[in-house]
Length: 186
Image (cartoon, rainbow, N blue to C red):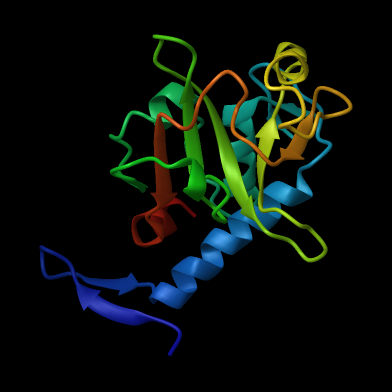
């Protein structure tokens, strides 16, 4: 069975994805993010010429065919009010690398300032990873803080790493995509 038709609150027929299809979409998001590794970092960027953290998420969705996804900053995505995201009640470092997981981070007492994507475990890897768009200052922080805990990227670009954003003890918020709601953004 490839789709289920259900009635919404207004009695309209809607397509509802099966759980296996939703997990496949999470894995697809992780795979697309992995394919974007080595894309140059560009503050405010949102295309293949250069992305920042929010642009990475937006570009991954657009590559998956969701052309109507609005560009949103990490602070907007991580506020728990985006209709097509399912906020995780208790964010966990352990869930950070789950394929398709969106992880949101604070810097000190400020609000959400960063987002990355859980990439899971790929064949031949020993640890599950995250895909992260990293600026030069972030790279320096990874080098300076918690030495040896992070795979240090070679340049400011989209990269894969094993640990959380280096200036944070863990995600301030996490969310998964509500693929049933999201399918209308194609």
